[in-house]
Length: 456
Image (cartoon, rainbow, N blue to C red; front, side):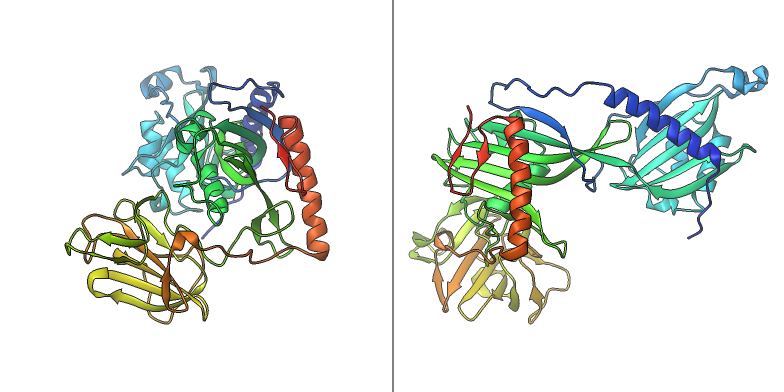
């Protein structure tokens, strides 16, 4: 891959755009006390020092009016024409760099020259729908453009002193803003977090963190509350690019507070810990599929296909076909294939005592085979309705010493508890987060003694 070096023109243009964008964004005061909405939700922006890898979010395209090439030629002096503010558009399915630039109003000659130059540092065939281009036009001519490829990468191109385009594959500047959100559940958790304006990516991270200890189908009720502290990532112009990591999560379920802090070990491995420094990660997930509702529990039941009652040795989770199924814990695949009425079936041995089984799958993860080692949370297959099934769902079993037990009744200890230097480092992180929570809403602070008072 060749890499052309940028001259002063590109750096000047990019720096200028970044400076103006910064003035527009950072020139606005950030309110420290925001009113609660009808759902009891609030938002607090506190600058964060960390940078978090973002993922692009969709934005409505702004289309640049077409350039009148004939008028340009007649005028003879491009510099006399006024410059236009930078504009942004998103790539659509079937777009190439050339198509995208011309659709934004760039002249055919400029678009071809710019696309050809970009091709020296990046493969134009890698353009994907949703990726955003920001361009600058002066005197009717394209002066520079930037293509955001991902969270922290972009392709930038600009004219040099000779008027030719040069391009570079470079890091994309981003910054994280610490954001607080909270609310009270009236009808459902999904509705409450939506009313609070908390991105679903953050909510999903919170659900996964609590999923070892909380049955979201049966234990979350109206009147329960939640609070989250997370990093919201912006680009240098103040435009949101993605949501970063969840930093803190609290749920108060039937009056019982549960609190989790994100903490990274010296080796870089991050996880969620309670106030005592116990990792929430357990040997087995309680729900190995996202967005599921329980359609049939453990115990005797009337089988809808066989027409008689028999023991239902697992739990059925109703989810659409194709939904990924995760390994409930680290272990070895002892069977991956067809298994009678179970249809497509996977069984994983986690220890000498525990094993899990997953049935009615529409298919298996690529390369999955008997004897393979898998990690907790790794995709092993996809929801389906193979075998004796009346509709798409995941049949999930937990075996203890070869006997099936109720997956929802399994209570397991934490895998690790911090000690020594790691515990001291975690306590420092927890105190810092507690300070941010206190500033976000006085009274909302988790304490190691297990008691929390959440301000109304």
